Length: 479
Image (cartoon, rainbow, N blue to C red; front, side, top):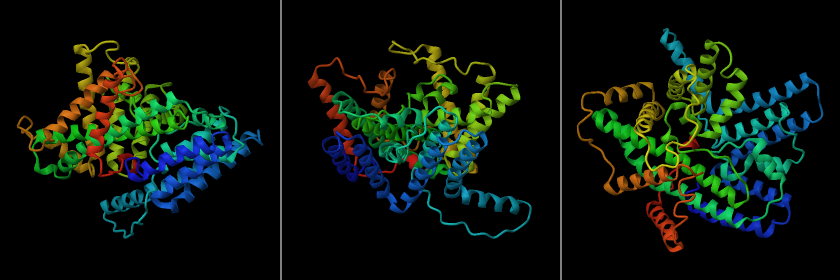
C-alpha cells in the first residue's frame, strides 16, 4: 500500500480509530492490532510474500528465546549464525540470484566459453532489505547482551512489522524501538499534531518536488545520448532533488505516522545537501542504514583502528556492501566504491569528524568558505548519483563524458516549467531555514499568528493535493 494513495487515506483513519478508541486500554490489544494492520498494509501489495516476513519473525523470535536458555558460547554462536545466514540467504536469493547468474555467464563469455542459462523471474518482495536488517539488529544485540531476549511473540511481531516503516524504513534498532512496544501508550495530542505536520511536509516533498523532478530527470537520463552537457547537468541535479525528496519524504511520512500511534522512530535524514564534506553527508543521509552498517559491519571489522591498510580496507568493504545492499547492479557497487574514495582522504587525514554541528548555526547565511564547501560536496554527490541512476556502468560513463562534451555552457534543452522551478526554490529556502530542526517545518511560523500559520499549512496542503493523483511509487521500494 502506497502512502500517497486513496487506499492509505482510508486505511490510516480506521487503524487510528481502532487503536485509540477500541484497544487503548490494553497494550497487548494495541500490539496485536499493529500486527494485523501491518500485515494488511504489506499484503495489499502481494499477500503471498507475507509468508517471508512471518517466517523471519518466527525464526528470530525463536532464536532470541533460545538465547535466554543457554550461556554456552558455542551454542550462542551457532544460534546467531543461523539467524544471519538464513536471513541473508532469503535476501540473497530474491535480490541477487539473477545478478550473480548473469555475472557468472558474462565472466565465462569473456574468456570464450559459452554458457546457456535462463534467469528466473524472481520478484523482489517490497521492504525485504529493511525488515531483514531490522530483525537482524535484534538477534545481534541479544547475542551481544545489549538487549534482553523478548518473550512475547506479539510484541516482537509488532516491532518487526510496524507498518509506517515496514517497506522503506527508517530501519529501527531493537534497542530503541522494541522497548516502546513493551510500554503502555496513551494519546498525546501535541505529539500527534507534530506527526501530522511532519507527514504534510513529507507528502509535499514526495508529490510536489520529487515526482515533478522525476518527470524531467527520467526524460534526460533515458535519452542522455541526445542532449548536450548543460542538459545532462540539469538531469543530474533534478535526480538529486528527486531521490532526496522521494526518500526523505517517505521517512517524514513514516515518522509522522508512527507518532500518531505514540511511537518514535529514529531520524533518517538531517538536511544532507547542506553538508560541508562527504563524511558529514553520510552522517546526515539515510541515517538508519549508515549507522547500521557502521555498528554491524564497520566496527566489527576494526573501524578506524589499526594500520592504514586496515582503515582503507574497512571503509572500502563497508561502502561497497552498502552500495550492493541497494540493488543487484554494478552501478550500485560503483556508487559505493566512489563514495569510499571520497571518504578515505578525510579519514586518513583525521578530518572525518570536522563538521559535527549544523552549518551556519544561528545565522541566516553561511560564510563564503562554508558555501563553497557545501557546493563542492554537492558536486561530488551529483557525480555519484549519476552511477546510482544509470542503467549500467557504460551508461554512467557516457553520461559523465557527455557533461564535459564541450557544450556545457549552452542553454539546457530540457528545463522544468517555471512554476516547478519556483516550488523547488521555495522548498530549498524552507529546508535551509529549518535546518536546525528535526524536519524543515517543525517550528516554521511558530511565532506567527495562528491564521497566518494555518494559512501556510493549508497552502502546502492545497499545492500537494493539486499535484497528487499519479500515486508514483517511492524509489526505495525497489531496494
